[in-house]
Image (tube, rainbow, N blue to C red; front, side, top):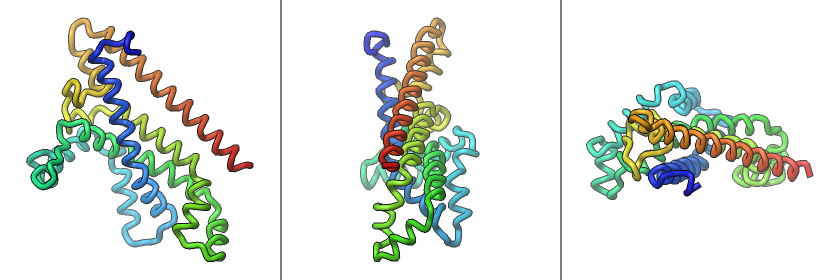
Length: 231
């Protein structure tokens, strides 16, 4: 791959993989928790939580990026506090790109996991509870193994969304080569300069290959887990 791409293109690919992996990993535990609350919880404000979770799917990505810039930028109320108190700066950094991608992919992750939880027979969880198991133990020993295919599907959807995210990231962290320029941003840059068609095509092919590899890997993992559960 390094021989097929120019150094700046290779940097964009590595940064995209880093951002997508970080965004997916950071979203996993909160995504499982929120999905469980929406699937099994009975509380006031559930509809509001559901709306907030799915809001990034409805809003234009540029709006999400702009809101992040207002709140988490160096001059934003949250961003200035993080920078002054902890030295954490998210705007115009790759970590900010990971945050933006995590927010954009979070609804897809939660929805896939929630559907898996709702498909689990509640009687299995009740039976484990009647044997004296705590709710946390029931989730870890009964629910979690059964929803692993849904978790994998949600992670792949989140990863793919992060790999292709453009509007929110370019608004929040800009398009800085070597720092925030991911594959979509690099492709966009190539389309704006004369003679950039070849570079845009190379990165487009790389994006397709990475997405296909992620889908194949998720299918193999899901099949392996399904066989284990059947056994």
